[in-house]
Length: 173
Picture 1 (spheres, rainbow, N blue to C red):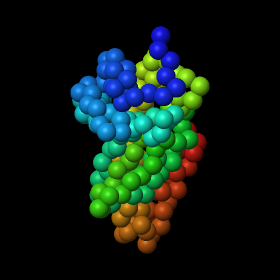
Picture 2: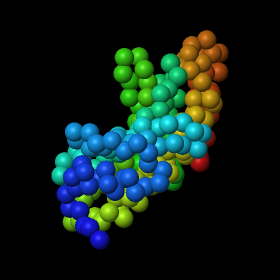
Picture 3: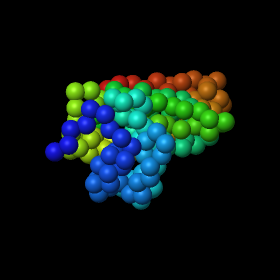
Picture 4: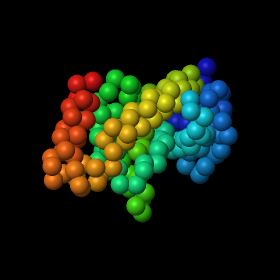
């Protein structure tokens, strides 16, 4: 059994190659990239980075439809408070008018972690992707675009009522 208190990119790639759901593992300068085929047969790109000698991060992103920032923020907030999050966190990224809902996880290596722990962390992250995608898709569908909330429906109060109902539904779950 190998215990890592510091892991090299090559060691990380070898461990991730042992995870059956990880495909096309590639070594990058500061980590590795691999593909994960989710339950809908979407190919998700996972980026793992050695942030510093004692910390690894894994992240992936889901492209949001244009003009769905409110749904993205609510989906990320809801995910972060849900039991399904289990060691992950979500946040919204905006890059040149393109919105992404990111999912991220960290593992600390201080004190030593064996290869099975790293492999289990990768498996857990991959397992969270399907649940995360379902929660985000539901938020986008249920809340709709930002215009639905703040635009034409806002004058009648309908958009804000929808936002309130949506947010309170997540808080109750």
